[in-house]
Image 1 (cartoon, helix red, strand yellow):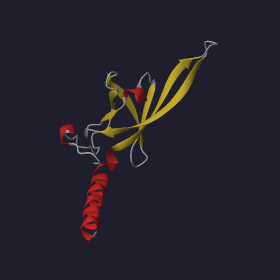
Image 2 (cartoon, helix red, strand yellow):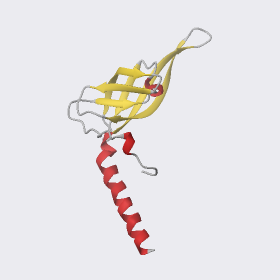
Image 3 (cartoon, helix red, strand yellow):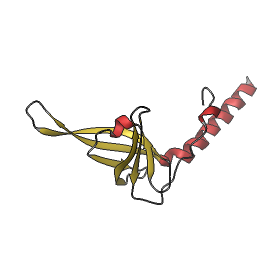
Image 4 (cartoon, helix red, strand yellow):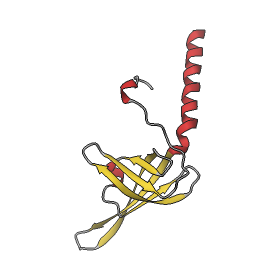
Length: 121
């Protein structure tokens, strides 16, 4: 039992280290899409999702369904700062998109090798 507790603590410490490292790289993404209703009125529809900063130059990886068709993309950083984003690439088949904000000093997450993933981590 004692050995299991030590292992659990070590795993917990590892997770906390990872969270500390990447938490500033996670952003909120707010979007506005324009839709036309049955009366031909154009109405704004708000959307929301998340993304991960993958480059200190401001590139953000997110899901395509979060930003698809967006007229406006707003990115909220860990500190509450809101930046205007723009879409730079999409892949609807894989539901992935890349957005960009005009900042060059952002923390970025290191992408890993999915072949090295283990169940539960």
